[in-house]
Length: 109
Image 1 (cartoon, one colour):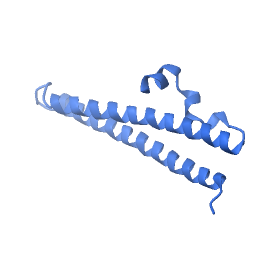
Image 2: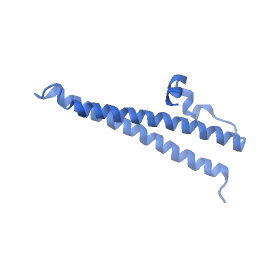
Image 3: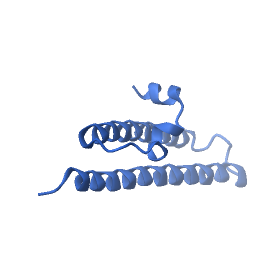
Image 4: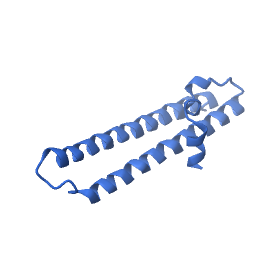
């Protein structure tokens, strides 16, 4: 039988991986954005070329930022549940909401 502590450690590992992949996706989208802007600036194409693609990329980036905000809320909720269930002390420095402004957390609601 899996203990709550061991299950919590597994969930924490998987959550951290999901957060990392989300940030990697955001970084990849940012690189794509730079590449697309370089095409506009470094070629003879019109400066408005690919505007629809730029708009779609910006929407994808917004959705990834929203996803990361939701993962932050998942992280906080799981952390609150884990400390309540186990009675173990919280270590605030590992909780993502410690470094996020209240406005950012509320805007996800």
